[in-house]
Image (cartoon, rainbow, N blue to C red; front, side, top):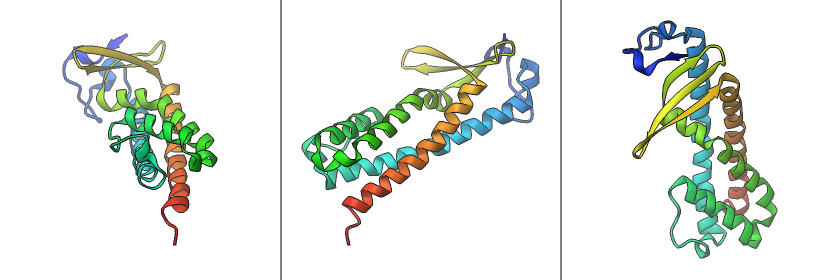
Length: 178
């Protein structure tokens, strides 16, 4: 295994001495591509989620479920799930909404690790990339293969598109009524 964090400075084409640690420029190119795709498409999906929360709260009776608009990710997820399950006017949208929220929950931790973690090790034999992140008073380590990272990238593209489409459908039904 090759430790990136313990070997000193990380220099090179991508700001790292990648080849010194066994992380090639090609692998770094792929990692940057995948991470960028996760970040950008997650932002699209979460932005749509924010709008869905507002639609549910103001237009669909969500204010009867929660007194305040949820701001944190976990609270938004729980709010959306409760609304989809309890509000009769949302019954036609329940299956799709829950599927999209479950999809976001499948990648939220990896996304969190990519954003808040640091590349710390690469094992060329197993092809696992290790990230570490400080979480309150402990260090958490997460290991991902290139295949897992690529799958998360592809999933985020679908989630971004799916959440936007779902949001538009809800807006057309409950907000844009001319």
